[in-house]
Image 1: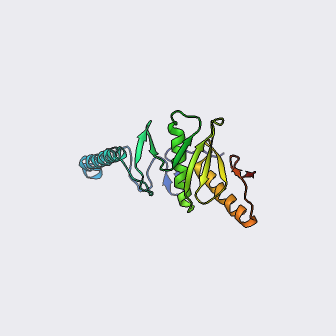
Image 2 (image 1 turned 120 degrees about the vertical axis):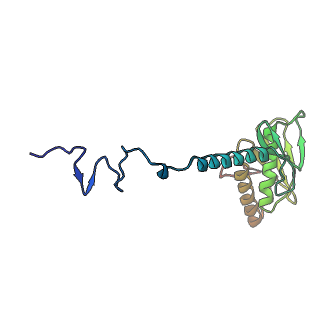
Image 3 (image 1 turned 60 degrees about the horizontal axis):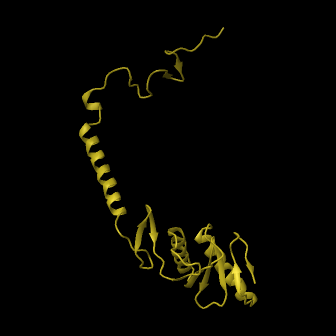
Length: 182
């Protein structure tokens, strides 16, 4: 009959309840074996300084790669657009639409394109029409989509249109991965 293993039993040369190095955790630590509290205090102080520096720097005005000022809007870091914005519906633009336009402008810059103007149609609240400098057609973009994905689709469609020598009036890139032109 096999005997059950207890606390003092030997498992492959090691005893249960003891550290591998032979140090017994039941014994109180000696003064030399503890980490000095002054080192712990210095570590916490350095951590607090780093956190405060990040908080202070986060509130500062930053400049992005295009040289535009960043402003803080509703607790979000927002880039102000520099392109012409035509609001057919009139009224004030929401910070969400302004942020989309600014990010579209930044993504266009990454693809080597420049946005000439952005038109917000009177009858469409969830889309903007993006006019690229040097192009006849404009691109319908949904404001709920990622600006990076929208600009990727625009660049891909532009290459296709140039290759096939198609000159549409507008291209709809509101559906991810698909483009429709008229």
